[in-house]
Amino acid sequence: MANLKVDIGRLLLKNPVMTASGTCGFGPEMEPFINVSELGALVVKGTTLENREGNPYPRMAETPSGMLNSVGLQNKGIKYFIENTYPRIRKYDTCILINVNGSTVEEYVQLTEIINDLDDIDGIELNISCPNVKMGGMAFGTHLPTAQKVVRAVRAVYEKHLMVKLSPNVTSIADFAMVAEDEGADSVSLINTLLGIAVDARTRKPVLSTITGGLSGPAIKPVALRMVWQVAQKVKIPVIGIGGIMNATDAAEFMIAGATAVQVGTAMFIEPAAAIDIVSGLDQYLNESNIDKASDLTGTLNS
Image (cartoon, rainbow, N blue to C red):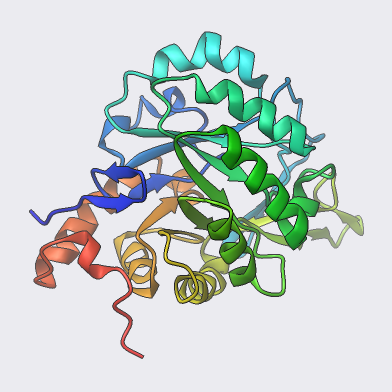
């Protein structure tokens, strides 16, 4: 077997395959299908200070080579997480990150301070890019000064791994990655979903209740690959690739383009064991390519 371990700043992952937030719940939901401890890392569903009901239905729509979602960060809040979910997932033998969301800088900071006291949470993924939340999300993720402000404020109160999730709905995603690095981020993850719309030709109405939603799946892979490659040229911190990764070949392509690790999301709606299959597939790919370590694959694009 190849050495699958990768180092993303303050964290050493047993392999480069993580889950994408929002696609596998909080972990226990996946236990009937996979051994969660076999993942490189578990990124749990987006979490907020208080309970959120999310957006009205319908909030998901299938599209060619992908899906649109407008779930709206439905979750029961950090207090419920600590009392009910945390005791169940802290036993996993893998790194655990919480996807952190807020409508104001103060909310981000308050939530982060609470998470900082959870010994068995290894890091946070700071979501400044979700296109489904009208208050805060888009503004933080698409405006450089506000992105800088929230990353700086969270870094000041958080002691562990800080990953910043970036929006593709900007002119230059590399600029946001450099700001995150300058403000102390340990890594950046990209891309979040692209803003899209689905229309019902029979009713001439939008399919989603919110009209627009986030596009994910194979349809966005070329865009995601391009952005990962661009960001990897500009920052020294690890880049986590996301966007249409369905198999081990996709994962290898993201690493070749500059990603240190990857997140698997939409594929798990089709095959819940997709992330674990990608781990074994990457091992096979590395062996067949005579590459001893997964980390040796990162940034090897011949251009």
